[in-house]
Amino acid sequence: MNDLGRLEDLPPDYVAALRAQNLVPLWPSLRAVLPPIKPLPQTRATYWSYASLRPLLLQAGALTPIEKAERRVLVLANPGHGLEKMQASPAIYLGMQLLLPGEWAPSHRHTPNAVRMIVEGEGAYTTVDGEKLPMSRGDLILTPTGLWHEHGHDGDQPVVWLDVLDLPLVHYLEASYHINGARQTVKPGAADRRYARGGMLPTPGFQRAGSAYPMLRYPWVEARAALLSLAGELAADEPVQISYVNPETGGFAQNILAFYALMLRPGQTLQLPARSPSCVFHVIEGDATVQVNDQRFTLAPADTCCAPGYTPVMLVNLSSDKPAFVFMADETPLHQKLGVYETRD
Ligand code: GTQ
Image (cartoon, rainbow, N blue to C red; front, side, top):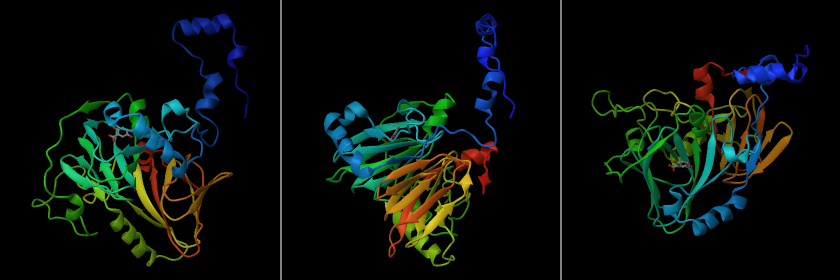
């Protein structure tokens, strides 16, 4: 690789003359923006222990009333990007949100897409676009771009969920904003019952919602059953993974980030190939290690970690007699739409 000229090689008055006209020479920065062969990620493999963050999240419940927080969230921030950027990866924001019994997080809508992965507690619900969606451990609830959403809690214990948003990307695009609204009127019916079985859809023109996001809640009991049933069909070394999809189109459930559930068989080691999108792992059930380059994280239930793109990831189920279940989020739809998606050996 030939060395390119540096900024210091140029006469200071020339650089000053360029700057005065908002001009910049490319060659001193060319290798930084177009590195050879592989990107230089800012995203660092990072791990967040639920047992360690939980007391701090509960403390936030005591320190800041919901009225003063609107959304009481501790953001899982990647130090590689700088904590103040509040991003786990280029396009992924992660937050642990706490709602205490009787609390209400008022209705708003915003341009970033969100999903919730329920971590602990019973009795809370999110109302999205007028649909009241109960929250139980492992359920995935969508809050797609532009839809009204508010959170309530009728139970008697704290409820915690993991928020996954494409906020860093939408903010980078200078397209991020929110609008506050009135409490929604709840309409009857639940889409997870309209789309209850694979391969069977409501008849077009009669019962279909005609909405871009027909299914807003993916119950964990269904996802877990789908994984166990799939595991029975696949060879022992094949990855047992499902994608959360839009049941009307079969495409990813949202436009920017994709969501998956993965089952690791007892004792299974699973090597995921290097792929261009960054990825997040959150353990729903069991204990597993996630190895990213020379770093290995040990994840207990409710622990979360992230990996940069273009990096192989190895998952190991630490139990020899029980399956482990992992929720994943990545930037695949975004990379595919932009034409930059790739897999490497
Ligand atoms: O629950 O609506 O973690 O608007 C960040 C922004 C959660 C929410 C977050 C939000 C929400």
